[in-house]
Each structure stands twice: as structure tokens, then as C-alpha cells.
Image (tube, rainbow, N blue to C red; front, side):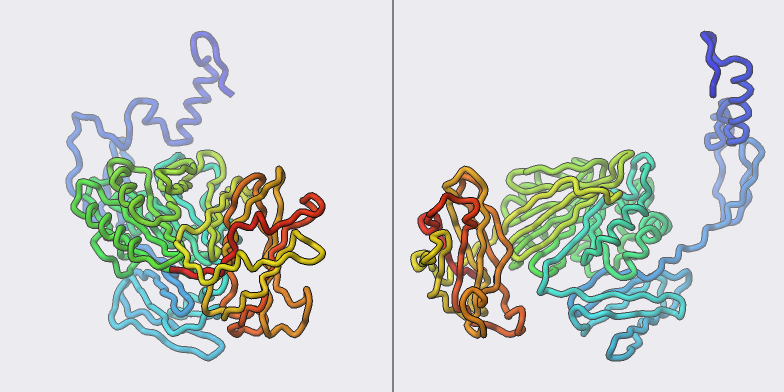
Length: 521
């Protein structure tokens, strides 16, 4: 404890201060003789070769032996229902060999030439299948291919290696939390390293997320720290491209990938004064305009405006196309905003509080976003966004609805006969004429059901009508029967408002403004 007087530190405090600084090796700082900054009168050092001993200003000598090249354990950079791409880094150049194992047996994959940065693409895989792999008799891992017949789940974070005071909560805590969540894959929205070097990538990203990366990919939208930070040696994505080798459309590593019913577009930081910026915006517009996915999701850093990022030009491109949500995060803090009609979600480091991240769930007609912190104690916020993709009406059944003889709050649509390969779902537009929220249920019955009456129906999850509002609900229906696994013929539909929330004798039909079978355009 420092002892203070009006005249400053007393004698005992000064002795303690001197002792502590000596122990910490900061004596030169007290004397104003900074060991990392020679006095102006001293000439600067000449070129230093590897292994040369350097005389410091205070007489200390240290050996500047060249640091060994970093080694990176196997990590996935891509996965799909039928493929996976595994990468790893060795100290010396050699032809990599990967042995893939499944219940069907083993297969060996060998690279055609020697290299340090290894990449093996595994194709012809089965959806939802477990695979094991081994490399060089040293590494062993396993992964599972994705499936397109279930909702997609993605964890999204950013700025784990960026320029912020060291977080009170280590990045490994975030990595552990994401690993426990077990999404299909994760996304980093920039700044996964500090200095743009292979070693910084290895220390700040690959080592910390090694457990997750060994079985699932983390797609990266590179930020300014991946683009040549600091810019003393020029602008370059060379190290990033070494470690994330894929087919990029330009020198700057931007790309897109489709998972299930969502297209993910990953942008790269490009100074807007460089020709590559305009090329990237043109590519972005083409990717969005040509997309046939239910959802278009754009990922980027998004914090360095206007040096690396021209928000005005970027947003003008987005508003002209169909974009459902933007994720960013190469800075501190987190926020959510409606930016010219486009949902913008930012999640970077969080000061002295646990790092936040987004949990994205992609449903057939809906995006659900939850905000968590890395301590895993609670969900902070959540949002829901319906699809904006146009739908085609296959059959308008609104007028065919028939009230149940005992419950006017329940409607039957007996003339819904249609094969499951001719429609995607049901659109319901309802008016809640009451002053309270009311849940409604959709039930559907296949023609080959063996039971009759109420037992013949499959029930979807309930949704809630907001009080006094007109609301549109989109219900996806399966292409194959969940029980038989085959295409099915729709026999009957039922729409029911929960009578516990309604006045006695309430007639539901006048408030159902539309009831249609729909398909994507």
C-alpha cells in the first residue's frame, strides 16, 4: 500500500516503489532511459541477421534467433452434406496425406506436391454421416457432414484478436461456449489476429479455437487486421489466403457459400480508394441478384469506416438487392440497428465484460437471432425475422374453410388435396380482433393415415396472434412424410384458435383473411 503525504510519497513508499520497479524490470523507465527507444544522440541499429546478438542500451544482451515457423493442427474450412475440406500447416514442405475413415471403410488422400500449407478436399460423402481422419500418424479428428432437412444453426462473433485492452474474460471462454452450443458452423466477422502474420493467426485463432475447428469450420470475413496490420509493410491478404485456401474471385478474399436455404456472402476489407473496392461491390450485387436461396446473409467487419469501408456505397448496393440481415463485428461493443430497412447486427469484444456472440437459427421461413455472452449465464436478447422472398400461390383455400360443428374457433379445409412435391407450405393471414394475444395451431393430415378423426393430424408448433393486428404466418410443410419418409398427398388441413383465450362462441372464419398453399417463385 502506498503511504501518501501532501508532499508526495514518503521515504518508505519510495523505497518500496524502487524495489517493485526493480523486480519488474522497470528501473530504466523510472530513470527515463527507455530500453525500447534509444536516446536521439545514439545511432540506430543496422540490419540484424538471424541469430545475431544485440547489445541493448542498458547492457543487456538477447539472442534474436529466428522464431520457428508456426505449426497448425488440422482444421476445417468448409463442410456440406457431401463434402468437407481439411487444412493444416507444417514447418517443412511435404506432401500431406490424410486417411479418412467411415463405417464403409478407409480411404487415403494424398496431395500431389510438397507444401507447407496443406489442403485436402473430401468429396462424395454422405449427409449427416460421422467421419474420422488421421494425418501423419500424429493428428486424429472427426467431423459430421451437415443435413439440409433440418434447421441450420450458426454462431457468429468478431474481434477476438483486435486492438482492444486485454479482455477480463479470455477468448478460450468464448471458444468453449461456442463449442458447447454445437452449431453447424461458426462465423468470424473480422480481426481474428492482431499483427498480420502466420504466427499471430496461429496464436490468437487456431490455438484458441482448435477443438471446434478440428470438427467444424469457422468461416471468416477478413477485417483490417487480416489485410496487412500494421500497414508499415503494405496492404496484403497473402497470409490469410495461405491459411484459408479457397477459390476467391479476386486478390481480396471475398467469397460466398450456400448452406441449406441460406446464402452466406463474406466480404473482405478493401480500402475504397483501391480499384478492388468497386469490383467487390459489383461482385456483391451479382451474388445477391442471382441468389435463389430463401435468405441472403452478408458478413463483414464493418467498423473501419471510412478508411477500409465506405458505408454509403456499401448500403446503396444492399438496398438495391434482397438482403435479410448483415452481421459485422471487427470492433468493440455490440449493437443492433435497422439500417435503411436492412437489419444490422454487430458483435465485437465487450470491454471488461464477457465477449458476446450471436446464435443464428435458420428455419424454412424465418431467421431467429439470439445474443449470448461467453459466460453462458443467460440469453440477453432475441429477434425474429420472416422471409422476404416472394411466394407463389398454389391453391387459395380461404373460402373453403368449414367451421367445426362444436367449435367455431376451429376451421377445416377438406378440399386441400395436393401432392407434397407441388407446394412448400401454407400462408395464413389473420386479424386478431381481440385485445389479447391468441395462439393458433395448424394441423395437416396425409391421405394415407391409418387413423381417422383427430388422430390423423400432424400438429405444427403454435404461433401467437398479436392483439388488434393483422399478421401473416408462413408454415413450412415437409416434402416427405416424417414417419414414412416418402412423398405424401395432403388430405385435410385444420386451423384452430385456442378457445381459452377467446370469448365463448367466437367465430374464427371472418378473421382468416387468407389461407393458401404456397411455393417459392
